[in-house]
Amino acid sequence: MTKDDMLKELLRALLAEGWADSRTAIPEDAAGQRYLLRTLMNIRPPLRAHPELLALQDRFLAAERASAAVTDPHRLPTIRQTFGAGDVPCQDQLLLWRGGITTLAADAIVNAANSKLLGCFVPHHRCIDNAIHSAAGIQLRLECHRIMQRQGGAEPVGQAKLTGGYNLPARYVIHTVGPTIHGSVRPEDERLLECCYTACLDLAAQHQDIKVLAFCCISTGEFRFPKLPAAQIAVRTVCRWLQASGHHPHRVVFNVFTQEDHDVYAALFRQS
Image (tube, rainbow, N blue to C red; front, side, top):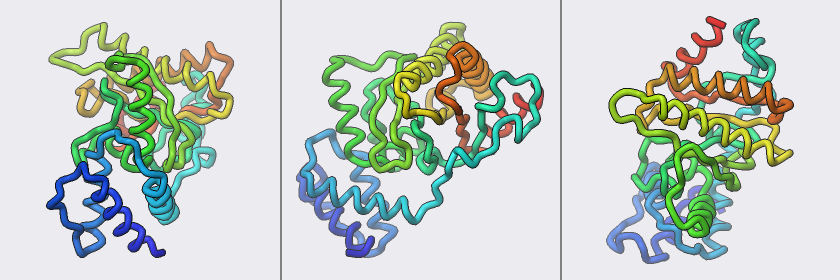
């Protein structure tokens, strides 16, 4: 079965589940079909999925991943190699990389989640939560749903939960809810953002197979935390944690997606 055949069969299987609009038609063109697939994956409720549906989805997403450029973090230069930053603590363990976090083969990646922890239900939304769930597949929302059912309430700001990575190149996803900024940044917001980084690192340290952990820019998107102070908190917290922890995980990647975010972090390391 070709990838195009798998895509059409996957769409038919998703629509046959019965929760989507019965009037939804499968587009004739491949681009339209791929757009509909992400739409359906974004809005699909956390209902139990038939094993055949999951197997078909996994085959299709594996084919998608095989045709994409996956980045090996072990081949990326460290902060010392990139910037020659002599005063940055743990500079040989830190990396700055610009790219889509769903293509990074880190042992674990950090997802900036919302308090429901089920992913983003807005079709094609540009948040990282949407991107990670779309690339990981249906199983990620199902696992998050099980976690939230056991928890019995919203995910608090500044904590972290670990799930599998499923169809991502990363083995694990660590989900954390950052502070949302209303007006100016308060000291409590800064404390909670620091807690996000610390909680993720603490959780990663509990798993010996997490040697490379990649952070996104927590809270700087939809949650409106200003980029520069957020980056300062991220770098300061990670460096302090690594110095105090015995250096595990062995490497931490600051993953940025935009040139603006890259420039903010780069300026911090050049000034050190």
